[in-house]
Image (tube, rainbow, N blue to C red; front, side, top):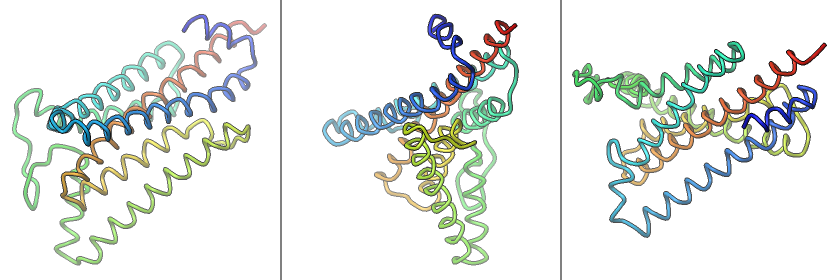
Length: 243
């Protein structure tokens, strides 16, 4: 890792950033595709391990926790070594919020009872606030409640498609001010899609899709922290070497 960064800083910082805008997002998306295919194959052809994959604190959920924790720790480490930047702070805060969400605000770690949620269940995650909004709107108007779900679906899917399109443009050599943040945008899009499923669907198959989406989003966030950290480290070393 150190040797690769040392090699990278022989280039101008802009060149380093351009390189990371193309291959790291492509690598992250490849990992996400591999994880999705592996989970689907395991669920279909190895039903005996399906519960191990999908139950509370199962393999997929714990994978999400590991990647979210890596994103939070990585963001903190890069901030200490290279200085705090807004994208890094944003990624770290998002990762921390989602890590707290996955651990039910710590209730599963420390054994306290979460607050009851209007309409049933418990308020043990930030995603429950969206469920609460949906239920409150249902009490006022079913159409407004489903309009909320529809807007979330359109925005989340649109953001994910935009990020994928931007990734393809990056690999072709075309960049925009958002080129370095496609993994964060794709992360938000995946989380939005997972929340739509959480609010509007109750089937076991869609619940499995939700879990995989959340794992993929956590992987993308961890890769984004690596991407930002790599560029910031290269800039910091370049600044020290510059006359």
